[in-house]
Each structure stands twice: as C-alpha cells, then as structure tokens.
Image (cartoon, rainbow, N blue to C red):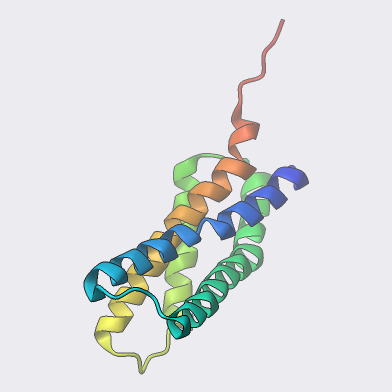
Length: 139
C-alpha cells in the first residue's frame, strides 16, 4: 500500500460524491422549475457539506481499513473493491438510516447510498490501486 496514493484516493473519492449531489439538485431543479433562493442556497451548502463529510468519514472509517486488508491479501481487482464498497454502502444504509423514515424516503436513501458507494469505490480504486497494477517492464 502506498500512503501517498491512498491519501489522494481518500480525498478525491470523498469529493466524487459531489457528482451524486449535483445530480440530485439538477433533478430537483427540473422537477420544481424554481431557481434557488438565498435560503435554499444555505440549505444546499449545509447538505453538500454534510454529504461530503459523511462520505469522507465512511471512507476513512470503513474504506481505508478494508483497503489495508485487501492490500495484504493482494486483492486488487476493481470488481473486488466494488463488492466491498457495496457491502459498506448496504451496511451504512441498514444501520444508519432511521427506521421511522417513510418508505419512499428509505428507498431514495438506499438508491443514493448505493450510487454514491459505487462512484466513491471506483474513484478510490482508481487512485489507490490502479497505479500499482501496471505491469513491470523487464529488460
């Protein structure tokens, strides 16, 4: 495991969750047809900070230890990381989502967490593992 590439992976993968947030806001803009107000902008900034910080925390608390274990076991394939990333996303949704949340909101939360998990996992793998998968050139 390379500390520099892992650190870069943690930062970029956490920020990649902004793709999901941007998609959610564009969808909401098209559904509502309204431009954002000042109050809406404040709520949006708080939501984005919360979403990205949650993504960062999950990557640091669960993703990095899993990466360490997978590095020790020499598991470096993208599909292996995606399976682990999806398991982490499922666990997050299962244990963190409040049980008294309405069913429609739980379904949306589940979809958002899984999509975010896929994107974050791919970006993490790309920066932390892919550079180490290059074949060694021998003379």
